[in-house]
Image (cartoon, rainbow, N blue to C red):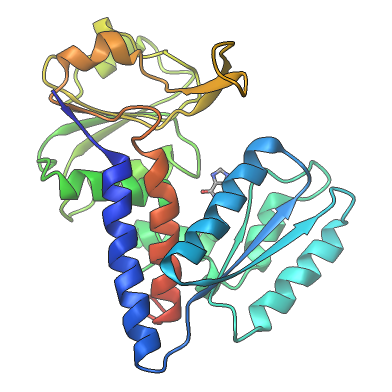
Length: 292
Ligand code: GUN
């Protein structure tokens, strides 16, 4: 069994990005600039956004964090995004999700300039990805593709089973795995809460990708011997032995599943660390006008 080391892969990607940024600056170019919008005080979201800003600093990007109270109106937020759309200094924009209930997330995504949508959530980017056109790929699926590529994992002709159909992970990774690219060329099954006899499907998986948010839901009896298992779950579970009172747990019962696998991602340290690196990669592409 080989551990897919997301931390090491993420560090390698960030070094590559940092070297490229240093080169851009050396030749008199401008640092890529990411703007991040955060609304409200959700602990997880604040940590994620702060980590994104810190990562920008690490690789030499400029960043702007716009943090609003959850009393901001939808109209005020939409106007702020329109301003950023017009700001030639800002290459990429992300709006951390989830948003408060009084703000329509779809409206927020649609008002963004899709050319700055480095999260790849805008319908234009989603549609272009489906059509196989150049687009910003959402960070988590992009990170999974990087892991498969950098570990030379064969995906062509394999049966890939995805559990979860979210817009952020399950749906886009299903599409990418089925595309005629490498990684890709897999036969894909998408499972979700209404799937009948889930273990029957998962036991057929050569590659099993789980993005549900239910700690430990994939047990050893659900996994084929030799499978590649990618665990996207990162749920905070209570842990009195930690000073902060919690730890992250994946969707896979790692202890019992890992011995059956050819490759598996740990949680933490698997897919998680890659998401920030892929966001940086998209922001670099935006600055270089590589996609649009
Ligand atoms: N919330 C959970 N994942 C993400 C992400 O990748 N981007 C943003 N903007 N919000 C998220």
